[in-house]
Length: 260
Image (cartoon, rainbow, N blue to C red):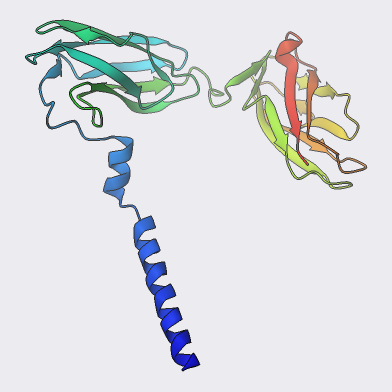
């Protein structure tokens, strides 16, 4: 009798597991629909763009591109734009939401900042209106090709001639007498050798560059290390001031977060 109870219990658990597994599985099409939802069928053609796709061709990664799209109200009533969602934070919508009267046109404007990107790109703006609150009424696309302005375009932070992948690090699970390290990719974009040093007020915190002398055009790594004599009693927010580069004091700061 007890054995039968165990068998029934195992059967129930297996059934629940299978149901949870089935529910947690999301198909590729379902994921695509979340990222790029289909246009509203009931609002089809009621707010129509003259040109849906803007191709800006080849641009430099330092160019700020401004584009505009013209939308016309083909509906029998006024249409209010409720939301405009860009698929990338690099594409910023600059025009306000508006209500478009019957037969009138609306100009949607946006700015594209390609900094830190390269190669072919394609981004969308989904326009939601009062015609359908759940699905977009119209979709606009911006596409083109980004050409890196230098060999170090993947290093998006500047510190004089030194290019860096980032200017902040987080050292986690810090314990006494255990060294924690974080790495920052760097490159010398100048014409002179760089010998990177640093100043910090936190005992046990240090910074070095590998290689120690960074030749013009060379890439390397900045290593941020921390080995405390005792485990910190609380999280620490501090800075390291980099020396050996010609830049302002604020530009030479690397922010460090130390977490227990």
